[in-house]
Image 1: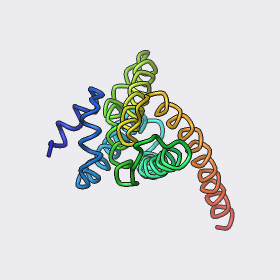
Image 2 (image 1 turned 135 degrees about the vertical axis):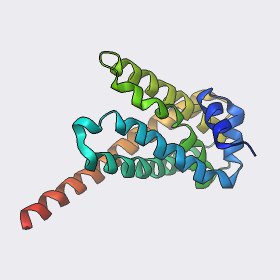
Image 3 (image 1 turned 90 degrees about the horizontal axis):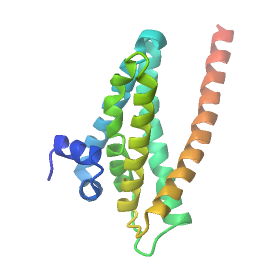
Image 4 (image 1 turned 90 degrees about the vertical axis):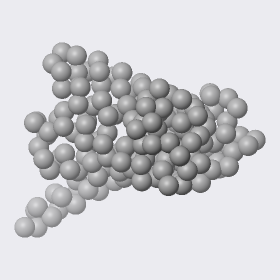
Length: 181
C-alpha cells in the first residue's frame, strides 16, 4: 500500500498506476476525502480575505458534496450510459479516483499571487481535468481515453446543473429564513 504522500505525488504526475492503486484500495477512501478537503482549504485560503470565513467553511462542505455528487454522476454515466467492454466499478472506487484527481487543487493558495493568480488557477483547472480523465479511464477500464473525456464532460455539465439547482434552493432557503426572522 502506497502512502498518502506517494499517492498525491503520483496523482499530480498523472500516473495511471496511482489511480489504479487507489481504485483497488478500499482503505484509500478516507485519503481521497483528505485530498478533497485539503484542496478546498488551499483554494479557500486564497479567497478568504474577500469572501469571509463563513464562505470558506461553506466552500469546504460544498467541495465534499460536489465530490460525492460528481463521482456518482461519473459512475452512472460511465457504467450505465457509456460502459466499455471491461467496465466494472462501484461508488467507492469512483470516489477514490475522483478524490485524488483533485490533487492539483492543493496548489490553490498560489492563485493569491497578484496578476498571475488567474493564470495559475487556469493551469490548476486544466491539470485537474487531465487527472480526472486519467482517473476515470482507469476506474472504468476504458481502452480509449476519448470515452473518459466524454464521460467527464457530461458529468461535469450535469454536476454543474445539479449543484446550481441545489444552490438555488439553499439561497432561497436562506432568503426565506432571514425574511421570517
